[in-house]
Length: 406
Image 1 (cartoon, rainbow, N blue to C red):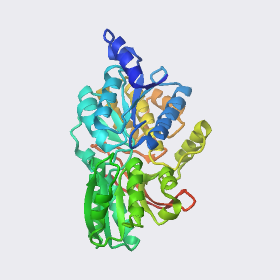
Image 2 (cartoon, helix red, strand yellow):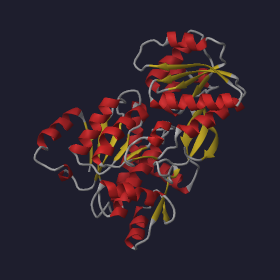
Image 3 (cartoon, helix red, strand yellow):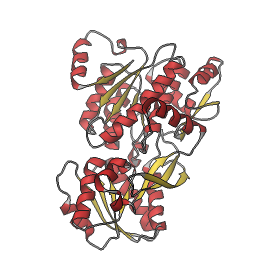
Image 4 (cartoon, rainbow, N blue to C red):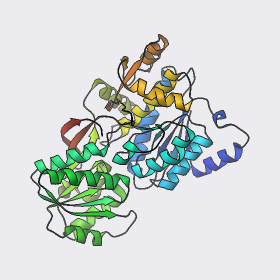
């Protein structure tokens, strides 16, 4: 079962659910809180397909707790309040046993604080990288399948220094993701001898960022670090080029999409320095790519699709291992199924996992995006890619750097 919950559909569900318990909708169901609209809509649709693919594979190989795994998807609109509303409806109306998402840290954090941690529903973000999440008071219910920006910011600072840049200005979206990543980058870049000439937050939804760009250009920086999302990031890049403020850019995971180079032109972005969480080319990664392309066509060069897929597998494995959808027991089982020891299972190996658990063995999931060895904070180790845009509109990985979690 798979449902996308539009505003109309959600209203109808709420009207008809007053006399029913939350779990009555379906015994084994998870929810995905995804940005189908708003700043991160370019990532939301593809990440949702990662969740759908995992659900389909799990159901084809036996389901969870002897039942079909259900999925409902709700739109966060890349907005904190809309995200909280979407999560509340999934938890309180649909009675989901776990949540995948959100993408933006600025949406994931309020969902964790006011919904999942309060209702006792495990939540795994596949894309939220803010260092703030590590020590968030979430009663242990928030996990993530991407490394903290404590890692990405350090690696990016080293990459930029290694590329020979000495003076950089930073503009970042004014939320937990933008501020956290820019701050870690600044610390590491300056540790390597560089200078960050400006640290400027920007607000989403403006028609012009020329004032911020003018301030960022003061101090003779050689490049602009842009930590943001495509919808407003494209406007910033276009105005930076039109006004002659910058012609060299540094970007992070939130801007790694062909949509950016299509809008600006590859000839203007071929010198881009980018960073993003990524995975090595393992058997699990190959299975995921092959299965995705069979189901949907070419795998787009965007981050967080594989981590959404892995988050879904982990929630399902934890429910199966716990023998229940009880939130506290699933939360505790997540540490067991993600970490050694245990029978190693990977993408597409749901039947193997069921057999191992049936025989009384523990399992250790090694995902499409790599291992997800959750620490006590729900954080994982990670791999960061150095990427760039190409003149023909593509995205090219230059190298990969492995490191520990935050």
